[in-house]
Image (cartoon, rainbow, N blue to C red):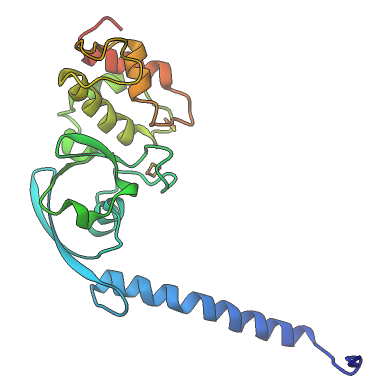
Length: 214
Ligand code: FES
Ligand code: FES
C-alpha cells in the first residue's frame, strides 16, 4: 500500500486549484457568448434571419442556436417578452408568430425566417392600449406583472383560435363552432402560469373582450 503521510496540502494550494478549475469552466462560456454577440464563427454557425417584428422589418445575423426569445430580448432589446422557465413550462415568453401563439423559448429564431412576429410592444402602447391590455387593467388581471405580456399575447391569439373555429380538449362537439366560455378560456390559457394567482380576473378580462358577460 502506498504511503501518503508525507503529502501536505495547504489552504493556499486548495485555493489555487479551485481558481484554476473555475477558470477552465468559465473561459469557453465567455468565448461562446462573445461569438454570439459579434456574429463571428468561432465554433458557432451563424445565419441571416429576416423577421417582421411588430410591423418593422429586422435583419439579424444569429448563431443558429439562438431561440426566438433570445433574438427578441437580447438582439432586438424587446424585453417586454419575459423569460420565466426557458423550458416551455410557464408561458411567460408567449408571442404571436404568423397569427398563432408560440412559446418563444422553445423555438429557434432561424426557423422563423420571413415570419411576422407580434410581441406585447406591438399590441398597444400607453395611451393607445390594445382592447385586451385595457381589459386586463380594468379587471386587475395581474399583480407582479411578470406573466402578463405572455398572458395577453396568448389571450389575443386564443380569441383568434376560437373565431377560426379551432376546437380544444374541452370542446364537446368537434364539429360545432367553439364559444368563448370560461371553460374554453381556462383550458386554452392553461399553458400560461401566473404565480400571483390572478386567474379569475384574467378570465374575466378575456371574457369581456370576447363580447360575453364577464
Ligand atoms: Fe418559455 Fe417559460 S420561458 S415557457
Ligand atoms: Fe405575477 Fe402573474 S401577475 S405571475
